Image (cartoon, rainbow, N blue to C red; front, side, top):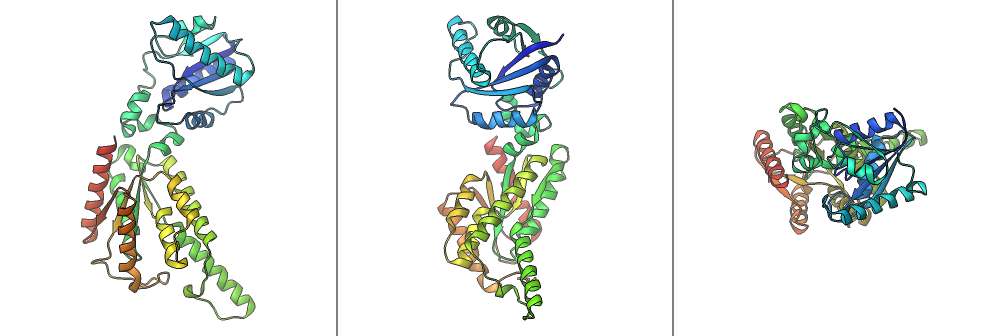
Length: 361
Protein backbone atom coordinates (compact mmCIF):
# COMPACT_ATOMS: atom_id res chain seq x y z
CA UNK A 1 0.00 0.00 0.00
CA UNK A 2 1.18 3.49 -0.86
CA UNK A 3 0.48 6.35 1.53
CA UNK A 4 0.21 10.00 0.62
CA UNK A 5 2.23 11.45 3.52
CA UNK A 6 4.28 9.43 5.96
CA UNK A 7 5.71 10.70 9.23
CA UNK A 8 8.85 9.57 11.05
CA UNK A 9 9.72 11.10 14.43
CA UNK A 10 12.83 10.58 16.51
CA UNK A 11 15.75 12.13 18.33
CA UNK A 12 18.33 10.62 15.96
CA UNK A 13 20.87 11.05 18.73
CA UNK A 14 22.84 10.22 16.63
CA UNK A 15 21.41 8.80 13.38
CA UNK A 16 22.40 5.18 12.74
CA UNK A 17 21.61 2.36 10.34
CA UNK A 18 18.35 1.53 12.09
CA UNK A 19 17.12 5.08 11.59
CA UNK A 20 18.14 5.05 7.95
CA UNK A 21 16.32 1.77 7.42
CA UNK A 22 13.19 3.25 8.99
CA UNK A 23 13.30 6.39 6.83
CA UNK A 24 14.07 4.48 3.63
CA UNK A 25 11.18 2.11 4.33
CA UNK A 26 8.83 5.06 4.72
CA UNK A 27 10.23 6.67 1.56
CA UNK A 28 9.50 3.50 -0.43
CA UNK A 29 5.88 3.41 0.70
CA UNK A 30 4.90 7.07 0.65
CA UNK A 31 4.47 9.83 -1.91
CA UNK A 32 6.21 12.10 0.55
CA UNK A 33 7.81 11.68 3.96
CA UNK A 34 8.50 14.16 6.74
CA UNK A 35 11.17 13.26 9.29
CA UNK A 36 10.79 15.28 12.48
CA UNK A 37 14.09 15.53 14.35
CA UNK A 38 13.07 16.33 17.93
CA UNK A 39 16.06 17.21 20.08
CA UNK A 40 16.38 18.41 23.63
CA UNK A 41 18.46 21.55 24.11
CA UNK A 42 20.37 19.70 26.84
CA UNK A 43 21.71 17.03 24.48
CA UNK A 44 25.33 17.17 23.41
CA UNK A 45 24.96 16.73 19.63
CA UNK A 46 23.45 19.91 18.13
CA UNK A 47 20.07 19.66 16.43
CA UNK A 48 21.33 21.33 13.26
CA UNK A 49 24.14 18.79 12.97
CA UNK A 50 21.75 15.84 13.25
CA UNK A 51 19.41 17.36 10.70
CA UNK A 52 22.33 17.93 8.33
CA UNK A 53 23.46 14.33 8.68
CA UNK A 54 19.97 13.08 7.83
CA UNK A 55 19.66 15.38 4.80
CA UNK A 56 22.95 14.01 3.50
CA UNK A 57 21.92 10.39 4.07
CA UNK A 58 18.41 10.87 2.62
CA UNK A 59 18.59 13.15 -0.41
CA UNK A 60 15.36 11.78 -1.90
CA UNK A 61 13.35 14.76 -3.19
CA UNK A 62 10.17 13.58 -1.46
CA UNK A 63 11.82 13.32 1.97
CA UNK A 64 11.77 16.45 4.15
CA UNK A 65 13.86 16.78 7.31
CA UNK A 66 12.10 18.97 9.89
CA UNK A 67 14.20 19.82 12.98
CA UNK A 68 12.55 21.10 16.16
CA UNK A 69 13.55 21.59 19.81
CA UNK A 70 11.54 19.42 22.20
CA UNK A 71 12.33 20.00 25.87
CA UNK A 72 9.15 18.36 27.21
CA UNK A 73 9.72 15.52 29.67
CA UNK A 74 9.24 11.92 28.54
CA UNK A 75 6.32 10.11 30.16
CA UNK A 76 4.31 7.84 27.88
CA UNK A 77 1.67 7.34 30.57
CA UNK A 78 0.82 11.03 30.88
CA UNK A 79 -1.81 12.29 28.38
CA UNK A 80 -0.90 15.93 28.93
CA UNK A 81 2.77 15.28 28.18
CA UNK A 82 1.71 13.34 25.10
CA UNK A 83 -0.31 16.34 23.95
CA UNK A 84 2.62 18.69 24.54
CA UNK A 85 4.93 16.54 22.42
CA UNK A 86 2.40 16.22 19.61
CA UNK A 87 1.91 19.98 19.58
CA UNK A 88 5.66 20.39 19.05
CA UNK A 89 5.62 17.81 16.26
CA UNK A 90 2.71 19.62 14.60
CA UNK A 91 4.65 22.86 14.85
CA UNK A 92 7.57 21.23 13.02
CA UNK A 93 5.19 20.04 10.30
CA UNK A 94 3.74 23.53 9.97
CA UNK A 95 7.20 25.04 9.59
CA UNK A 96 8.09 22.46 6.93
CA UNK A 97 4.85 22.44 4.95
CA UNK A 98 2.66 25.28 6.16
CA UNK A 99 0.19 22.82 7.69
CA UNK A 100 0.38 20.06 10.31
CA UNK A 101 -2.39 18.06 8.64
CA UNK A 102 -2.45 15.37 5.97
CA UNK A 103 -0.46 12.65 7.73
CA UNK A 104 -1.93 9.25 6.90
CA UNK A 105 0.89 6.95 8.10
CA UNK A 106 3.32 7.03 11.00
CA UNK A 107 6.36 4.77 10.66
CA UNK A 108 8.20 3.72 13.81
CA UNK A 109 10.02 0.89 15.54
CA UNK A 110 8.89 1.92 19.01
CA UNK A 111 6.20 0.59 21.33
CA UNK A 112 4.61 4.02 21.46
CA UNK A 113 4.14 4.04 17.68
CA UNK A 114 0.41 3.12 17.70
CA UNK A 115 -0.37 5.88 20.20
CA UNK A 116 1.57 8.43 18.17
CA UNK A 117 -0.18 7.41 14.96
CA UNK A 118 -3.58 7.60 16.68
CA UNK A 119 -2.94 11.17 17.74
CA UNK A 120 -2.39 12.08 14.11
CA UNK A 121 -5.41 10.08 12.96
CA UNK A 122 -3.03 7.96 10.91
CA UNK A 123 -2.20 4.31 10.37
CA UNK A 124 0.79 2.93 12.27
CA UNK A 125 3.40 1.05 10.26
CA UNK A 126 5.79 -0.93 12.44
CA UNK A 127 9.29 -1.26 10.99
CA UNK A 128 11.55 -3.93 12.48
CA UNK A 129 10.47 -3.39 16.12
CA UNK A 130 12.75 -6.26 17.22
CA UNK A 131 15.78 -4.43 15.75
CA UNK A 132 16.71 -7.62 13.93
CA UNK A 133 17.90 -5.89 10.77
CA UNK A 134 20.09 -3.38 12.56
CA UNK A 135 20.81 -4.21 16.23
CA UNK A 136 21.91 -0.76 17.34
CA UNK A 137 20.60 2.21 19.31
CA UNK A 138 21.56 5.83 19.82
CA UNK A 139 22.38 5.07 23.45
CA UNK A 140 24.78 2.31 22.40
CA UNK A 141 26.47 4.58 19.84
CA UNK A 142 27.02 7.35 22.38
CA UNK A 143 28.39 4.88 24.93
CA UNK A 144 30.84 3.19 22.56
CA UNK A 145 31.00 4.56 19.00
CA UNK A 146 33.75 2.13 17.98
CA UNK A 147 31.59 -0.88 18.84
CA UNK A 148 28.82 0.49 16.61
CA UNK A 149 31.06 1.79 13.83
CA UNK A 150 29.56 -0.38 11.08
CA UNK A 151 26.14 1.11 11.79
CA UNK A 152 27.21 4.73 11.26
CA UNK A 153 27.15 6.85 8.11
CA UNK A 154 30.35 8.59 6.92
CA UNK A 155 29.27 11.96 8.34
CA UNK A 156 28.54 10.50 11.77
CA UNK A 157 31.81 8.57 11.74
CA UNK A 158 33.66 11.81 11.05
CA UNK A 159 32.01 13.34 14.11
CA UNK A 160 32.89 10.50 16.46
CA UNK A 161 36.39 9.74 15.15
CA UNK A 162 39.06 10.67 17.70
CA UNK A 163 41.63 12.89 16.04
CA UNK A 164 45.17 12.36 17.30
CA UNK A 165 47.64 15.03 16.15
CA UNK A 166 51.38 14.44 15.93
CA UNK A 167 53.32 17.69 16.38
CA UNK A 168 56.95 18.63 16.84
CA UNK A 169 59.96 20.49 15.55
CA UNK A 170 61.47 19.81 12.14
CA UNK A 171 63.14 16.43 11.73
CA UNK A 172 61.80 15.13 15.03
CA UNK A 173 60.05 12.10 13.56
CA UNK A 174 56.47 13.39 13.35
CA UNK A 175 55.71 11.85 9.95
CA UNK A 176 57.46 8.61 10.84
CA UNK A 177 55.36 8.29 13.99
CA UNK A 178 52.11 9.27 12.25
CA UNK A 179 52.58 6.55 9.65
CA UNK A 180 53.61 3.95 12.21
CA UNK A 181 50.78 4.72 14.63
CA UNK A 182 48.15 4.51 11.90
CA UNK A 183 49.63 1.22 10.67
CA UNK A 184 49.69 -0.22 14.19
CA UNK A 185 46.05 0.68 14.79
CA UNK A 186 45.04 -0.67 11.38
CA UNK A 187 46.76 -3.94 12.26
CA UNK A 188 44.09 -4.59 14.87
CA UNK A 189 41.69 -5.49 12.05
CA UNK A 190 37.93 -5.11 12.13
CA UNK A 191 36.76 -1.51 12.10
CA UNK A 192 40.32 -0.45 12.93
CA UNK A 193 41.62 -1.74 9.60
CA UNK A 194 40.46 1.50 7.97
CA UNK A 195 42.69 3.68 10.18
CA UNK A 196 44.25 6.48 8.16
CA UNK A 197 46.85 9.16 8.65
CA UNK A 198 46.63 12.64 7.14
CA UNK A 199 49.89 14.01 5.70
CA UNK A 200 51.09 17.57 6.17
CA UNK A 201 49.57 19.81 3.53
CA UNK A 202 52.02 22.61 4.35
CA UNK A 203 54.86 20.63 2.82
CA UNK A 204 52.88 20.09 -0.39
CA UNK A 205 52.08 23.80 -0.48
CA UNK A 206 55.74 24.67 0.04
CA UNK A 207 56.86 22.36 -2.75
CA UNK A 208 54.31 23.85 -5.14
CA UNK A 209 55.26 27.39 -4.13
CA UNK A 210 58.97 26.76 -4.77
CA UNK A 211 58.27 25.03 -8.08
CA UNK A 212 56.20 28.02 -9.22
CA UNK A 213 58.92 30.45 -8.15
CA UNK A 214 61.52 28.48 -10.09
CA UNK A 215 59.39 28.37 -13.24
CA UNK A 216 58.87 32.10 -12.99
CA UNK A 217 62.59 32.75 -12.48
CA UNK A 218 63.48 30.57 -15.44
CA UNK A 219 61.02 32.40 -17.66
CA UNK A 220 62.57 35.73 -16.63
CA UNK A 221 66.14 34.47 -16.99
CA UNK A 222 66.80 34.95 -13.29
CA UNK A 223 68.81 32.68 -10.94
CA UNK A 224 66.92 29.69 -9.59
CA UNK A 225 65.58 30.51 -6.10
CA UNK A 226 65.97 28.23 -3.11
CA UNK A 227 63.72 27.62 -0.16
CA UNK A 228 65.27 30.49 1.80
CA UNK A 229 64.41 32.91 -1.01
CA UNK A 230 60.67 32.40 -0.63
CA UNK A 231 58.63 35.06 1.12
CA UNK A 232 55.48 34.29 3.07
CA UNK A 233 52.36 36.16 4.07
CA UNK A 234 49.73 35.42 6.69
CA UNK A 235 47.02 34.47 4.19
CA UNK A 236 49.11 31.52 3.01
CA UNK A 237 49.18 30.01 6.50
CA UNK A 238 45.40 30.44 6.72
CA UNK A 239 44.99 28.62 3.42
CA UNK A 240 47.28 25.83 4.61
CA UNK A 241 45.28 25.42 7.83
CA UNK A 242 41.97 25.35 5.95
CA UNK A 243 43.24 22.75 3.48
CA UNK A 244 44.76 20.63 6.26
CA UNK A 245 41.41 20.52 8.04
CA UNK A 246 39.59 19.68 4.80
CA UNK A 247 41.94 16.73 4.27
CA UNK A 248 41.23 15.59 7.82
CA UNK A 249 37.48 15.84 7.45
CA UNK A 250 37.56 13.80 4.23
CA UNK A 251 39.74 11.10 5.81
CA UNK A 252 37.61 10.91 8.96
CA UNK A 253 34.52 10.04 6.91
CA UNK A 254 36.10 6.86 5.56
CA UNK A 255 38.42 5.89 8.39
CA UNK A 256 38.33 4.10 11.72
CA UNK A 257 37.43 5.38 15.21
CA UNK A 258 40.87 7.06 15.35
CA UNK A 259 42.34 9.42 12.76
CA UNK A 260 46.06 10.21 12.94
CA UNK A 261 47.00 13.71 11.79
CA UNK A 262 50.53 14.79 10.90
CA UNK A 263 50.12 18.42 12.16
CA UNK A 264 47.09 20.72 12.53
CA UNK A 265 46.13 24.40 12.72
CA UNK A 266 47.67 24.70 16.20
CA UNK A 267 51.06 23.74 14.77
CA UNK A 268 50.50 25.92 11.70
CA UNK A 269 49.97 28.94 13.96
CA UNK A 270 53.27 28.26 15.72
CA UNK A 271 55.04 28.07 12.37
CA UNK A 272 53.33 31.35 11.43
CA UNK A 273 54.96 32.78 14.55
CA UNK A 274 58.31 31.31 13.50
CA UNK A 275 58.26 32.99 10.08
CA UNK A 276 56.19 36.14 10.67
CA UNK A 277 56.81 36.87 14.32
CA UNK A 278 53.34 36.38 15.83
CA UNK A 279 50.64 33.76 16.15
CA UNK A 280 47.99 34.04 13.44
CA UNK A 281 44.52 35.11 14.68
CA UNK A 282 42.92 33.55 11.60
CA UNK A 283 44.71 30.24 12.01
CA UNK A 284 43.94 30.29 15.73
CA UNK A 285 40.23 30.53 14.88
CA UNK A 286 40.56 27.47 12.65
CA UNK A 287 42.28 25.64 15.50
CA UNK A 288 39.51 26.59 17.93
CA UNK A 289 36.77 25.49 15.53
CA UNK A 290 38.35 22.10 14.79
CA UNK A 291 37.67 18.95 16.78
CA UNK A 292 40.98 17.45 17.89
CA UNK A 293 41.27 15.20 20.89
CA UNK A 294 44.88 14.40 21.69
CA UNK A 295 48.26 15.84 20.74
CA UNK A 296 51.48 13.82 20.76
CA UNK A 297 54.70 15.83 20.82
CA UNK A 298 57.83 14.24 19.35
CA UNK A 299 61.08 15.30 21.01
CA UNK A 300 64.27 16.03 19.10
CA UNK A 301 66.54 14.23 21.57
CA UNK A 302 68.09 11.18 19.97
CA UNK A 303 66.79 12.03 16.47
CA UNK A 304 69.59 13.09 14.10
CA UNK A 305 68.75 16.15 12.04
CA UNK A 306 68.24 15.32 8.36
CA UNK A 307 68.27 18.16 5.87
CA UNK A 308 65.99 17.10 3.05
CA UNK A 309 66.09 20.44 1.31
CA UNK A 310 62.88 21.70 2.89
CA UNK A 311 63.92 22.39 6.47
CA UNK A 312 65.21 25.56 8.15
CA UNK A 313 68.06 23.88 9.96
CA UNK A 314 69.07 22.13 13.13
CA UNK A 315 69.62 25.34 15.11
CA UNK A 316 65.92 26.08 15.65
CA UNK A 317 64.78 22.58 16.59
CA UNK A 318 65.16 22.89 20.36
CA UNK A 319 63.52 26.30 20.40
CA UNK A 320 60.51 25.05 18.44
CA UNK A 321 60.18 22.04 20.73
CA UNK A 322 60.08 24.40 23.73
CA UNK A 323 57.37 26.48 22.04
CA UNK A 324 55.25 23.38 21.48
CA UNK A 325 55.74 22.25 25.08
CA UNK A 326 54.92 25.70 26.46
CA UNK A 327 51.80 26.20 24.34
CA UNK A 328 50.44 22.70 24.91
CA UNK A 329 50.77 23.23 28.66
CA UNK A 330 49.52 26.84 28.70
CA UNK A 331 46.41 25.96 26.69
CA UNK A 332 45.82 22.82 28.78
CA UNK A 333 45.56 20.71 25.64
CA UNK A 334 45.46 16.92 26.26
CA UNK A 335 48.89 15.75 25.19
CA UNK A 336 51.69 13.27 25.62
CA UNK A 337 55.41 13.65 24.98
CA UNK A 338 57.25 10.75 23.33
CA UNK A 339 60.97 10.16 23.23
CA UNK A 340 63.56 7.47 22.60
CA UNK A 341 64.03 5.17 19.58
CA UNK A 342 61.17 4.83 17.05
CA UNK A 343 59.70 1.65 18.57
CA UNK A 344 59.64 3.20 22.03
CA UNK A 345 57.96 6.32 20.66
CA UNK A 346 55.36 4.19 18.93
CA UNK A 347 54.66 2.23 22.12
CA UNK A 348 54.31 5.47 24.11
CA UNK A 349 51.97 6.91 21.50
CA UNK A 350 49.83 3.76 21.52
CA UNK A 351 49.57 3.93 25.29
CA UNK A 352 48.54 7.58 25.14
CA UNK A 353 45.83 6.84 22.57
CA UNK A 354 44.55 3.85 24.55
CA UNK A 355 44.41 5.91 27.75
CA UNK A 356 42.55 8.70 25.97
CA UNK A 357 39.99 6.33 24.46
CA UNK A 358 39.43 4.71 27.86
CA UNK A 359 38.72 8.01 29.57
CA UNK A 360 36.46 9.41 26.85
CA UNK A 361 34.14 6.47 26.15
